[in-house]
Every structure is written in structure tokens, then in C-alpha cells.
Length: 86
Image (cartoon, rainbow, N blue to C red):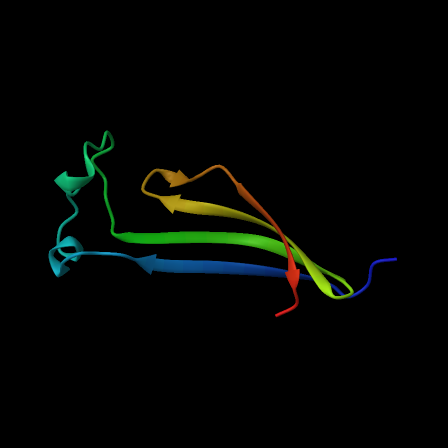
């Protein structure tokens, strides 16, 4: 019944900053409030797995992603979307 089912793996890496000093220091920026772990990196890394199912005009996407943080990985975050093929 379903055809053209494709899987994928992905890694997203990025950072957002206000000044270059945030890349030379591992201390938590005070403007964001307190941080219990005292570990900080301006880089955000997310990895995940997903599947795409072609439903004719629309594409059903189901993905699961995990954020990498200093103490390991987060709980899985699930994404479900329905939209045109891209």
C-alpha cells in the first residue's frame, strides 16, 4: 500500500552568539540566569533518525532527535510533519 519509503539520518550543528568572547570562555553567560551544571558551550549539536513516506501529493515525515549536552544526550524529541515533497 505504501511505496517509496525512505529513511535518513542527520546531524545539525550550530551556534548563536552576541560576541566572540562567548567562544573563548566556558563560563555560563550571566545574562541567561543561573546554570546548575556550570558547564557551557555555545555550540548546539542535535542528531537523529527519520523516515519519509510519500502519500501522493504530501510527504509524511516522522523524525526523532537527541540534543548533545555536556552530560550526555537528551531524551528523544519526536517530530511529525505533513507537507509537500521537497
